[in-house]
Image (cartoon, rainbow, N blue to C red; front, side):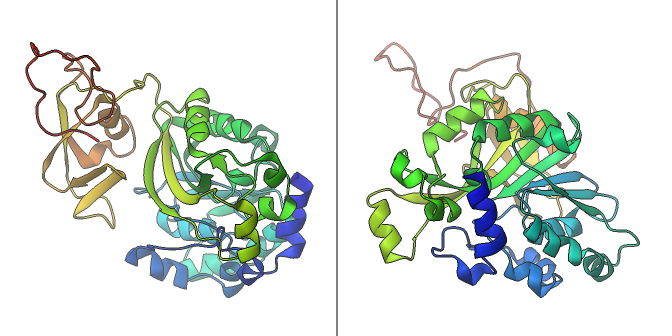
Length: 349
């Protein structure tokens, strides 16, 4: 299957228009600040884009970012502008034809961005084996990936390697295709369906459990939307299976709790992250308005306090007291007990 994917993206596809479905080519909800960044990119790089979502994590200035499955480099060159000349973006892909496009326009983008030196580099290799590319443990601040991990034949290896190379407090922020049930083997083994990002899609609950097993204790869903396949023949083959494009962020933080525990903590966002003056969106359930005190669980507190986001928040509370599960998180005490006082209103999730 790996050779089939290489051929599909290196030879069969010559541009986005060659895709047989729209699963691997969506850009819905592009924020306004990203549009001028894309306008700076070379047309050939834009035409060889096969992504399914946005990979624009906040606060990247001066950081080292790794793009897993960078293809022709569209996201690398967007992120190059966000990390700035003092930052670095590393793109990894296994398809030489794609990397040739990315490398061909490296100097073009350096000049377009006004940099004295290029802050990007491209490596050919498998995202399951980052150690073979001499990517050291705890060397990367943020990892992104755009509709590629579903193409990997060993997804656990990808997540384990991502966890290894991330610095403590770093994060894997990526978009991918998921299914509402496990994809049958007959479909998973089809080269076209696999290349179109459908055959290799993980069942969403299998992904969550896999992420936790690989060290990412509390995966956070940022955004999601249903995928319309746009090809009647392929839709007939996949039948009742529903597919979704979803963006997750997975933090490398030791000691996160397996549930949403209430320690009486809260945060206030200062409004100081570039392009996000009015609020900060950690995930789908945590949009923190600037200046407003916002109750959070212990894990959320640490995702802000123990990461690059700390300077942009005021933190209240510690872990000295515990008040149980946050109300509304779906994991409350299951027992009927009229002697207990009613839970306080509100909730983290």
